[in-house]
Image (cartoon, rainbow, N blue to C red):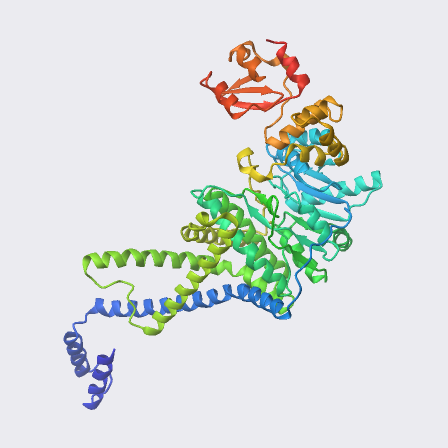
Length: 635
C-alpha cells in the first residue's frame, strides 16, 4: 500500500494528469505492476486479505462485547455478596416451618402412561409433606394415560384425574387450565381451599423437602422457584451433559443475579409454587389462568408476576439429607431431541415473547430481555467462532509440519489484542462453568465441560436458526405456532439413588401408618423382627400397603397377575426348588425375557442364582401375598 502511495506521488511530481485514458498513466501502471510482481490475482488476494482482517476484527469486537456482557451476572452476584459482607449481617438462623397449608400439584400429561404411574407413586412416598393433592391432566384421545390416571385415583385418595375437553395435544397451558378447573370443582365439592399451586412434569423427581420449602417461603413471596437440575448421567452421554453444564451455571449465577438486580424471575415450568391469589387475578383479568397461545407460558407468567408487584424468590441451591433441594429429571439425551426442545424454548422466550411484550418494563427488565434474546445472534456466532478456532488449530499444526506461514497469522496488533482478550474471557467463562459443574456433579464430570461446550454451541445454533425459520414461516402464512412436546423418561432404580425413601418413611408419607403408630411399633417390636412383617401381623397395614411401600422403597414395580392367564410352558421354565427356596413364580415369557414375581424382593445373590438356571433375561415384579398364594396353587 505504501509503494502504491509513493507511486502516485511520483506521477504527480512529473506533472502527469491523473487520467485513466492517458498513455503515460498506462505505462506507469504497467511499470508499477511489473516492478511489484503484482497481477490481477494478487490484487484480488490483497482485497480478500483486507476484508478478512476487518471481518476478523469485527467478529473479535462482537465476541468481546458479548463476553463482557456474560460477566455482568457474575458481577451482580459478587457485588451482592460483598455488600452483605460489608453490612456484617448476622448469620441466618434456621427458620421454623409454619403449619402446612394446602398445596395442589399440577401435572399435565400427553401420552405419559409409561412414566406417570412411577412418578406419582415415588413422589407420594418420598415427599415429607402431607397436606397436598396431585391433579393429573390427560386428553380424551389418550386412553392409555386415562386408564393409568383412573387406577392412581382409585388407589390414592389425594390423586385426582382431569380430562381436557378437547383432543390433544393442544398445549401445556391448555392442559393446565383444565386441571385448574378440576381443582376448583374439587374445592367446591369438598369444602377445601388450596393456597398454593405447584407445577410439575410427568418425569420429575420431587425432592422430599421441596413442598416444605415452598410452604415456608410463600409467607414472604408470591412465587417460589425451586432449583431444577438434570439427573447425573455417564460422562459419555454428551448431549445430556450439556444440560448438566448449562443448568449448573444458570442456577448458580444467572437466576440469583436476576433476583438481586430487581428484575423478574422466570418460572422453570417445574418446581414453581404460585400464590393462589395470583392465579385468581390472572383468571379475572383474561378469563384463563395460563395463556394457551404461548409456547413458554411459564416464562411469561414470571414476567407478569413481577410486573404486578409480587415478590419472587429463586431458592438457593442448598444441600440437604437427600442431596440438593432441587427438582431432578432426565433431559433429552440425543442431539436431535435436544434441538427440538430448545427450538420451542427459543421460539417462545426469544421470539414470541418479543412479539407479545416487546421491550416494555424497567431498564432492569429490558436488560434481562436482552440477555434472553441475544442468543438469536450469539449462538450462530459462537458456532462460527468454534469453527474458526478448530480450523486455525489444525492449520497451525499443518503449517508447522509444512514449514509455511500460518493462515491465521495477524499483522494488525490491535486485532491481535482483541483476539487475546476474547480468548481470555472465554477461558474465564469456561472456568466458572467448571466450578459450578464440579460443585454439583463432581470434578470428574467437570473436566468434560470444554469438549461439551462445542456440542452446546452446535445445539444452540441449530435451535436458534430453526426457531427463527419456523417463526418466519408461521408469520408469513399467518398460522399459529405449534407446540412441540418433549418425550419424557422416568429414572429407574439405579438412577434414583438417594431419592428412594426408606420403608418406614414410605408407609408414613403414603398415609398407611401414622407417625405415632410407627414410633410405637418400632419400640415394641423384637430387635430382630422385620418392620413390614410386624406391622402386617399386627393389622397396622394391609397386604396392598405392604406391597406398595416395598415397591416405593426399593424401586421394584408391582403387578397384579391373573393366575388363570399364566401359560403352562411358563410355569415350568424354572426348577420348582428355586420357587420354594426364593419365593418366586415365573409368570410371563415375552421377547426373550422371563418375568418372575414374588411377595419379597430377592437378594442380589438369590437373583444371580435364579438367572444361572435360564438363558433368558430375568425381570422381577412385586405382588401381594394373596396374589402370590393364587399363583402358587398352579404349581
